[in-house]
Amino acid sequence: MESTNFIHDIIDEELSSGKVSGVYTRFPPEPNGYLHIGHAKSIVLNFGTAIKYGGKCNLRFDDTNPAKEDIEYIESIKEDVLWLGFKWDALYFASDYFDKLYDFAIRLIKQGDAYVCDLTAEEIKLYRGTLTEGGKNSPYRNRSIEENLELFTQMKGGKFKEGQRVLRAKIDMSSPNLNMRDPVLYRILYKSHHNTGDKWCIYPTYDYTHPLSDAIEGITHSICTLEFEDHRPLYNWIVEKCGFINGPRQIEFARLNITNTIMSKRFLKRLVDEKQVDGWDDPRMPTLCGIRKRGYPPEAVRDFCERIGVAKGNSEVDEGFLEHCVRENLNLSCQRAMAVINPIKVVIKNYPQDKTELLNFATNPQSKDSGVRQIEFCSELYIDADDFSLNPPPKYFRLTKGGMVRLKGAYIIKCEDVITANDGNVECLICSYFPDSKSGEDTSGIKVKGVLHWVNAKKGRNMDIVTFSSLITAQSGGQLQVNPQSRAVFKNAVVEPYLFQCPDGMSFQFLRTGYFIKDCNKFTEIVKLKDTFNK
Image 1 (spheres, rainbow, N blue to C red):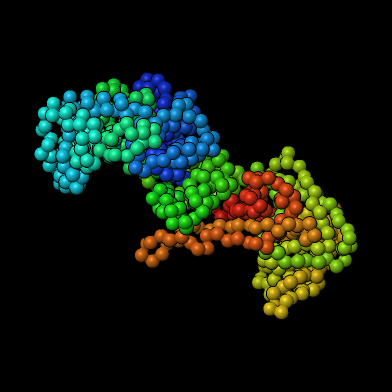
Image 2 (image 1 turned 90 degrees about the vertical axis):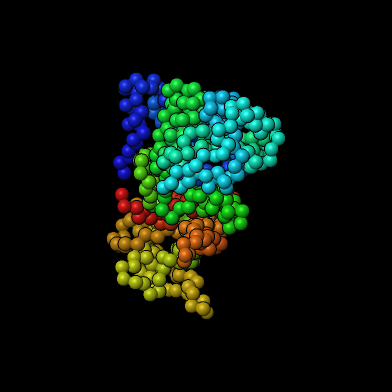
């Protein structure tokens, strides 16, 4: 995919014209939940832009609502940014500026640009009007500057109840933009704040705090998602009214939407609260901590975000392309190994029962420096039950009774007999091998089309293997529910002894199966092997 970035085109033009002399961006999450894959695009864009132009990028927590914010979310966000490979130039909290924001509010009141309003939240909404009809002025809009200063001071001093009074900007109740119809700047909230404790009982709104935080930090380009485009006039109004000359330029881009992926903090929190998933870092979750635990490499996530480009219009990216980027990265970096998810035993009757043979196995054919390791071959093996059929369909190139296949890196075998249980299920395959058909030294002249992976039955170890499918399934009426088949656990899986000894967090390509990561004595699926994405 050819990536595009209209924001960088704007910056190039501003730098060449001398409108700006440098680039200073920020990533400003609200610490009210865990970040998901959609946030990765903003992280990569803000930090990547600063890196490209030799500028700086801050990490700032826009913590204006203590009712929903938590230290847990702050720490997780910092971990996510670092995992993606970025380091902030400065770490700030919007709450660091609460004293300055209060002073700016006093300035607005003195300029006649803000007033204390006694309307309730419901009344403010009613007075605001609609998209087609203008609003009407609050009966408290023309209070004197002195009265507004006195009331605002009393609000700060805890003299009123929550919802009893707010501070509003005085702009234009007839504006076609609803955001400009005297928006609320401060509300009363008796909640302890993670950073400021109980110092404040009035808190600034996000729309008031965000532009001033950018201006205070000297941000040159305030890059945000498209839903803030209608807020841009208010952003500029606040910056200008508070005396900032040549303040930040807000530029909006389309947020990341991925097919079959829900990226709503509220919905994801519901899944966690209702214990429908195993926490925020459940590998099925689209959270950054979830895909990290699943084994997605951060380099692949950055590559995905860069390749989809930055556009102005909303669109949806195929989830297959994200998996494609992950698969491309793992294909180059992962060792190869063999694991059998649904084992069926193979006994090679003409191979000495007490013999063990060491065979060379390529660690990663995609890497010239990966080398080889040795695997043990013997008379008893496991192959996957899906690789044998008593009644094979047309063009079935795996093992059948009387048929022949090659075992990966080993010999050609022929199935001579099948032992079945009383219920008709296959218990064991009796096979023979051709001693002169060894891989790399084959002089047998036998041609076979099927190549199967296998595990030494005498040395292999049982380990759970976990596979995944879509977490969410759409039900009738459009209601979203958790897919009960979103996780499958294979208890009888058998893996090479080498895999049992490897440390947690190590990723492998299981031949003919997929990419998996070791996690607490089990292997969980990262991404399936087959790449169906139409390049």
